[in-house]
Image (cartoon, rainbow over all chains, first blue to last red; front, side, top):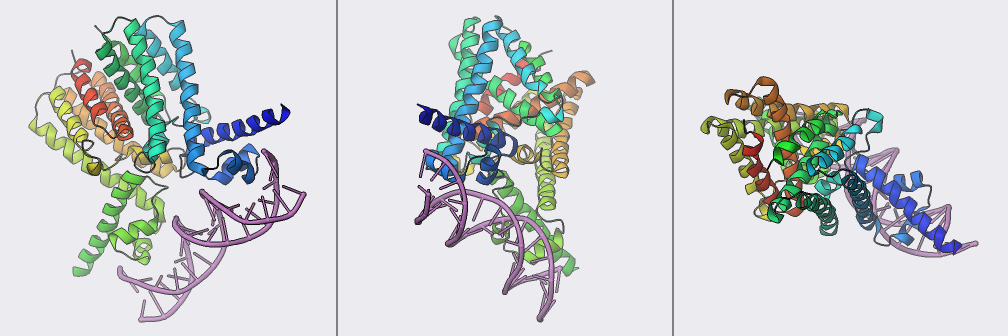
Length: 192
Length: 192
DNA sequence: GTCTATACGACGATAGAC
DNA sequence: GTCTATCGTCGTATAGAC
């Protein structure tokens, strides 16, 4: 049992470090050597746990980021009843990261998606799935709030796109303003 | 004069090729060798025209993309009077690229911005300037359409962020739907 | 399963002939 | 100004000892 735990822990540590670096630097700027150095694991372990190398590791990292964001959003959605307030709050939570430069954790899945959409079909699909999972969460919240299913689906995709664009824009300015302005528009967009 | 023309032409050819490849593949996935091979110029010429190497070339490529998008948007804005219709049309024009996979030209400045925002300050500033130029074009159109200046500024940034997010989202799905859904929301956002 | 040493190619950049 | 040869570094991946 100790062996299995050690195995799992090494694997998790690699994925966690990879997720952080891929977010901050992107796929091509992040070398396996850097991931291994920062996670303090030898190269042999990486290719034991991820026989398909960097691409497989990136896919698992994307799934990891997907689950993390998903959990965070669902927690907020359980605490705040009205869809517009809930979505606004989750955007301002993301925006907080851009208040101090040293707090910036990067572009969760968007950077990897943009880099690999035309390069790796498996990675592209992993990123698409992350986006669709998040959008589904928005959609369900909107349906609960009384929106018709079709409208809720469209708005889910639009809101997610707005957030991704807002992150990119805030990242470029190293400033939370773009994301906060987007949060401000949410009630207008969701007016029935 | 022939010399100067030849000089200018070589420079332009490198920038044009670099712009295309950076859009499609990003900064780190695009090697100088690939740019030189595809533009049919030798390595010596590149470092003659761009003594600061890859970073300088990328900055000039960003400026080139900025001007291209800017010109295209202003042309549309001159032809369509109402801000909401004009902005909607310019988004559907971008969306057209995602109808056929072979037409996709990538992520104009967004990919480079996301890759380099935390890596190169000069490159980050070039990307920020591109975004601000585009936003200023939206803002001016909105002011002409009767919006108060402060509101127009905020909406300019929001619209640009939405478009950037829409491009990323359409790129990930290799499908124009996200951008078209965003275009659909523009009148709601601009309702006075 | 863990770890090290190494293979091999591509990268950005430079030197120097012309 | 144009072009080629080459440098040093780092990339991913693998082989094989333990």
